[in-house]
Length: 284
Image (cartoon, rainbow, N blue to C red; front, top):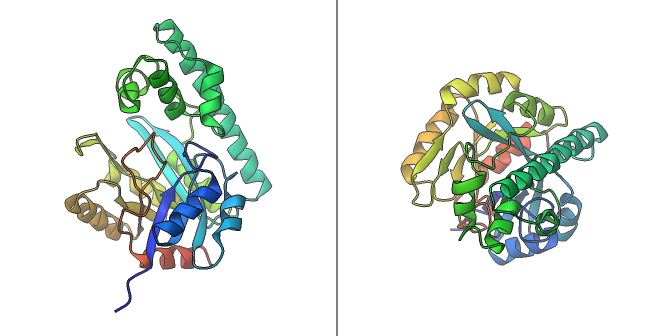
């Protein structure tokens, strides 16, 4: 009996906060035996042309993006798949989000200086290489010896409510969903539960309250399969997806270290059927 094609719909490159160049990520996807790879950088699609060009036969690269949005209790990340990423208006919106990212990161670096944990802005930019974010500031904190690890940097300085945290320019989850749908993308809520280093749930989105408004805006999927999610968590989220008529998607959130250091490309079992459903919804 033939094995089901392997799928990972959530991975990052150096275009945002990943460790691998787009072509390197595609090469790793081939090495681990993936049939489908979703490239979903934060607020940018700059890595997509190189990733698509490197794919070749035997590996499908799904063009995607991950948008960061805010709600009163924290952040909601929204993934978009099969979008017309070259749309000029969409690219303008992404550029505005990236500019806000830079301004926010600069403000956080300034706060760290006031907290006597200074890092070099030039070093943060060098670590980013592309879209700058908190993981790059965290890496700079580690290099400067102020913290022992990236998770500790978030726990002590950069996490929501911590002394160096700065709010981002507000983009609501519903706005992100509509933004993705306007360019033909399938919008999916990413990692609705965030786990701590011990595997315990530390952030749990209020899905019964959140999903009705997002479905009204055009949401079509929920990330159910994710790094370190237990069988019980996955089953719970699958029920939620079915209740709201959403595609149950998934992926590793591979960065090659940093934000999700334990995530391994292709290590999360994601049903191939979800790719087929996403493709149909996108009219591909």
